[in-house]
Image (cartoon, rainbow, N blue to C red; front, side, top):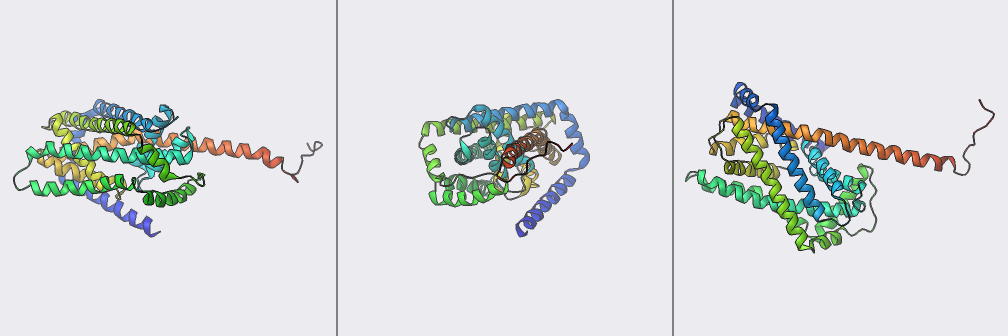
Length: 343
């Protein structure tokens, strides 16, 4: 109850911050910026995000053994949808996607969890590289008195990302995480494999450096599709940014989101990040908020069907399980046999 109350307070504070930032930017200018993008622009942004999902699924698939690419693609789609729209609980998207991968043939819940942990860690490492590149591209725009301030901001944003990767390299942390994960899995009705060595499974995946390198490269390329999206939005609303500026803007906003992972939906954090970095690139507050809103619209368009697909799969599995138990219950000793004379 205390944790849920705390998350609710943080979320409401984030919503309040986002609203205040939007009001500060001006509703009419934001509306004009969004109107200039149109449905065609939103479609282009969604298409580019779909490319990102395809690349991330390929990265995930590269660290698996015997799992189909289709299973990784659907599970990654579900992960992004759950993270963006159900992010009231940290890492809920990752947990749901691991379960989805197991249901789709990912080698059981234990193995699916192991490859998901490695994939998330590799993606975090590639994000750290992406953040440093983004800062390097933003650096020429900084004034003399802003350099130290931005160096501290970037370093602070990298700490949780690198910490996430470091945790996956620790057997003690993975063992503790396995115990906690089993409790979470029981909440979702998932069965856990007793005696499964999660730390050992993760170590075995890390023992294949060629696959890790390939996954890292694919994730890094996937991150750049977000930069292209920001650049396309900027071009549509008349923002004076180049493609490299878009990479710097997107990379640092994503770093801010990752650093504030405890804030549900990154409410207010994403908008504040666009305003802060956008000011360095001479974007107006209305243009910065419009960019954030377009990306949130993209998350809804792509994420809502993913969540519905996951709920549908869980419902079908539940119905199939009850149907399989029914004959066994009727055939159990002492079960009442139907009277053929009863009309």
